[in-house]
Picture (tube, rainbow, N blue to C red):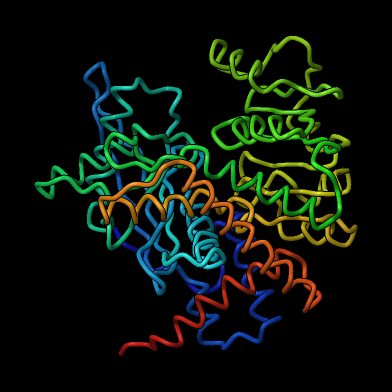
Length: 425
């Protein structure tokens, strides 16, 4: 079914959605946003809830719930990842779609915000079951997706192969290959070089821009990364290779700490064999919560939303936080940290590298002309550094936090597009 979201909050009271609304409301007041535009931007354009039945290997049928939300498409087609997670819900997907809208606008690419999800525990499925579920979910959201309408991408627990299944399902229904329907695909079927590590590389560029702004050297920095997955794991490798000292990392099962620094390459080998960072030799075992409270120079939350709250904000010691995950800091915790002088690079700026290179991939698919990885990385660096400079300059000019400045730019660009197009009828 398709539902129209209410205009003031979500009945579930889910933290990410309430945080997203509070952030919008705060910046709307700061920038004196027109009430009609503010009200429009508070509500997702459309929310699709689907049942996803699929066949298990033993012949039985399992049914899970899926979602696809378009927050705003005023500036272009909807864009946003698909996550597979047993606790995903509509409120969370709405928040992520809203953040995608601002994220695309901040880096000034012509997309609107979307997000999708399936409420499923991926670890409990075989690869064949995962493919059947993915293809059924893709079939259920076919009315919304397309290269000129809505372009999905990987997110939590989804990867290149899952994107290839979605592309194939869509293309089969169209009767011809449509590589531009998804991004984050394998290069063999129209994926972009440099896309796999784009979010992590963007996080690295944001950390380097921050250090340059604060007059700090790269080689004197200690970094803790919560969430050793696609984004956090590769970010650890990039930062280590650049000369930073990665002192702590964690995944869903366990965490590691070594004041002298960890070797991400060795951790990657261990994780490939063991499936987790747990029991990696040569490091002290810590919990995810303990990692957040590590005494380090830069904290990178790269796992899930809502990990820093009013309950632990006072225990955060890092003077710099770069949000690789979406919404890792709640609205009230953000106030506590800012009052303390913590330099926070907000998610809608910090992790925009992924959607930026997704845009590059979409452009290459449409043109059927592909760039080499050096071109991709260089264009990504220029866009990310330019976005940081714009956000930081506005923050200084108007005495805002970086999050407020980022929202001011993102919301402002979407609002300008909305007012320029007008309201029909």
